[in-house]
Length: 396
Image 1 (cartoon, rainbow, N blue to C red):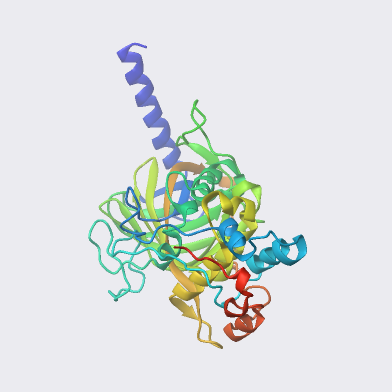
Image 2: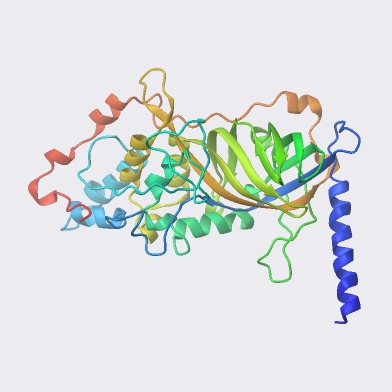
């Protein structure tokens, strides 16, 4: 290819992207001269800070999984009904009772995430860039589980990969009313679910900008949310709002629910990249994990579901239940990557539909309402009452 032809193709590609951005204006009125641009989610994973060998954040080693716990509980194998099925029941209907197994939380003072409560507390982290007050207690629960560590963690890998492969996960956001992608004191951000596959390059691995997306106004109505924000130095920051979003590994449709969610994304004409942070609803998070990842898949990277549930409830730091006082949500952060797209104009919801948004409610747990006292009483047998031959060895 000649240098002249290469330059011509590059210019043409740039012009096509700029034209797509210009044509992406929403159906409603936008002030003259204001910019509108839309992006589609291409990569998503829980934000886990980690060192090369893991010793700084996991000095006691990594957690054991379902398989290791089962062997410790039932060294002779047991029977299908009284052992294997019982462990499945314990995973789907976990309690807060002590199971006798050690759980290693991520240690250290560094984590990825945002300051969600505007304070700097004794349990907060500092970001790798030096920002204090980072709230990410979910990292304490996941940081020493191999399944959630890059690059080999199976859940982390497939969660991220399936964002692109399954159309159910087609999360969009649109910025309207911007002065520019560099500085804008006020912008409106609308979150949608799309309907169309991503546009990949010839390798089939990289999503390219300029693809088109229709908005799902029927089945995706529960995801539509409007956020107010601003852009400074090319970084979009939004005010907190409760947010539901689709997440379907292995084509099993599930949802997540994050309270007081906010975006902090670096914007360019073709990409957006950064963090989605807020307080993840514990019951919704755990239900999504169980529906998406069977005991078999959890064993890929040593996830022990009942132990993880207890860690989530123990570390939960927001939104206390009015009846019990127990926290129902845990501070968290997602690493997200988006690529620019054009929203098909005819697919836009009318203003009345936007005004009548009814966001999804979080999952309340099986059964609901479920109090800590009920959970503890439901544990049978407890760790202290197991026969001597069935005592777990723990994580030494």
